[in-house]
Length: 251
Image 1 (cartoon, rainbow, N blue to C red):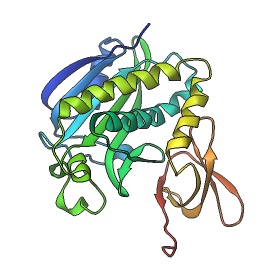
Image 2: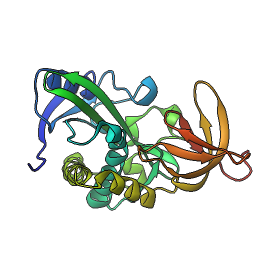
Image 3: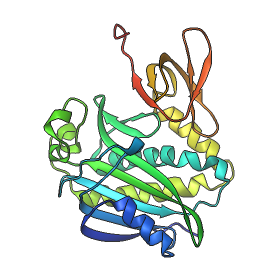
């Protein structure tokens, strides 16, 4: 069955992910998507707050009910990053960088955040996939200007939110359908590795709640985890941590 998202629009919500989860638990079908002009309690990875003022960003969440083995559901954030990359090229000719696992960067600053949450519903397990894209610099506070960027900052002009949304929905549908084909998971790994220079040979610092270490990236595991080779030659598998680029001389 073709994947045809249905968009529900709101002026304001605490969180599009929270609303999509509520709808999923009430029985909403796969492909129901929630878009809000603002979020009053937006959130990102690792329980971080996501600034979401009105008219400054694209705040989008969608219900997914993947028909693939649970072991590869962890690739959905990477799939989403590929879709955002595709959508920005299509809608505003903006080529971006994908940082592991799913941040979208431009000029080493964050343009888009992605959050995937798994929930249980009466129809079975589902994924709520949230995507937040900065459309202009009002999307984030002044103190984040060195680490965050917007589409307007990147291309020098305002971009139509609807154009970005429609490109995103189409790109997400395309990537999601490919993901569910035979060898679709391997295809996501291959495409992500092709488009992200974080995949191989990137000097990074890895910081988790338990430790911090530096190393060089050595590809992805089949579930999307990042392989990092330490100075001692040990391959560490990173599944949940902050991974940042280390420039020569920073260490």
